[in-house]
Length: 353
Image 1 (cartoon, rainbow, N blue to C red):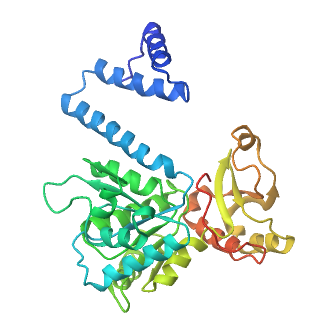
Image 2 (image 1 turned 45 degrees about the horizontal axis):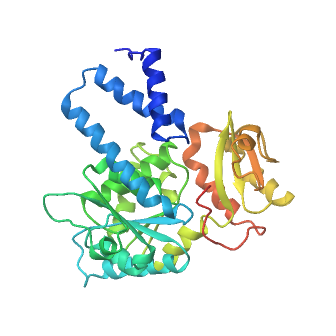
Image 3 (image 1 turned 120 degrees about the horizontal axis):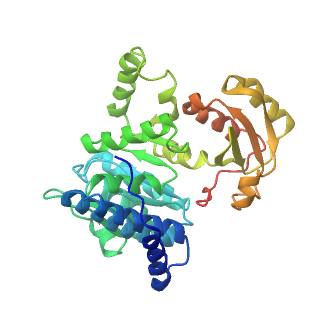
């Protein structure tokens, strides 16, 4: 069914409403949100569907307000079971990895519940923790660490909760858990594999000597790859480890030299923290020619759309005609960039990237 176009006078009334309400920034986008709401009414949308839409927008607004003051702080989300007990070795692993990342200047984001979520909040401390909880009829209430610090938002819907747990973070650690944890891990892998999310480090952390994620890795190797339902290197983007130090190093090291990316037309621009040498650039062309559809990987200055948006224009860049059907392999290129001798020491990423 085609969209019903709002009469011009209604559009003008929306603009006048926003002006009277004092909305000045991004007025075009806010007007579109209001117009969509009007359109839902004109479509005679079912009341339940309207309630879902209304609740989702309300929850997202609350979550955006929670995260807004910490926009300049790099964040890592730690996923895991609500049922893991404090005397479990996995609980200690979550405490330790959260503490290690907080010590490096990162905030830790969790689902704000008990178990691994509480362990991560304990490790990071309330001053470095943010929580996105889910309202359930059983099992889960926000843990005291984030609740008492007033750094938690409660969600009715899992899809809005997962959006905020993923959207705000520049790294992810998954500790063994149940259906919920596996669902979150698979969503991360799917977003990366399909290119719907920018490359981001993903760590599957087990207890010392644990076999949970190692068994999953074997399943991938023995079943998914031979069946042809994923590419042979799709899982290479993930670090499987039982070392807290290795997990923290993977999260922070991913941002050692790589900063961010942007598609400009059909070309991919990678923004770096340090200018590559001629020899390093040549090594990229030798190793990754199969990912480039034509031409070479070259240095570039900020492109016109980047300048217009004031988008990381102070950083060195490389540009290429990247094969968009192989976006899942981009992390190999990023790892090579991070291994350059010219790369600076690892430090927290710029969250504005």
